Image 1 (cartoon, one colour):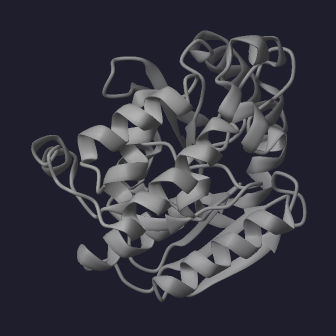
Image 2: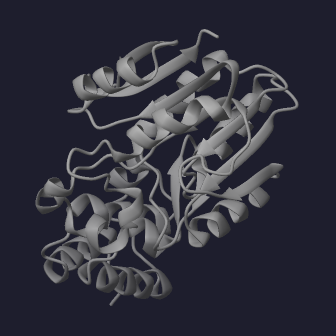
Image 3: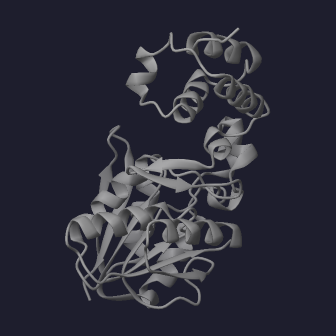
Length: 280
């Protein structure tokens, strides 16, 4: 007998007892092409046999610890559908705020690096939103340390018809000079692993998450290498862990005395982003 959306949700919750209800709902409304509000209003909607079978398959994968975005094969970032797969970091909504900040100062003709591009979501959002604002002739670059990330990013750049130069690099070694560098780098302390979502640990690349005992390994390398890879009066925009602000302020004040630094909170009020501008 055909089941309603409400019944499918109840059955899914019973089968995937350790899965968050939000993840079940997210998979269902994405598969059914519903908005969250439509999903809430259409609980008596009767699913087709095909839809019901797909839901059963998805719930089985969720119950095995797979992330919903990997099951779908995509995640949303700034309204853009971004292809993702295991081995590539799932885009975070907080990173949209970093892109918005970079867009405030972006100018036509600038050479921009998305450092540690992962899925390429930052470059996609930055490039497409720049087009809407009439910012032209950007020279876009995207780098990462893994081949899996670069292949996925390239697919996303092709999908959105963006001309992006791709480079394999560990932080900035071997790269050119840029006008702007933007990055959501690894910043989680190794000691925080025990407190993390098991789905994240099981599915997402460790090199995109963890950054040593204090979470600052990337930033030390970046501060040391960056002046050789930034043009005069160039800028950088970085995300960081909300508990790392004071340590990062001290690190950058010591390592980057010729830079003006501005720290911003995210929409939740947590310290999250830093902008640096070279005064030379």
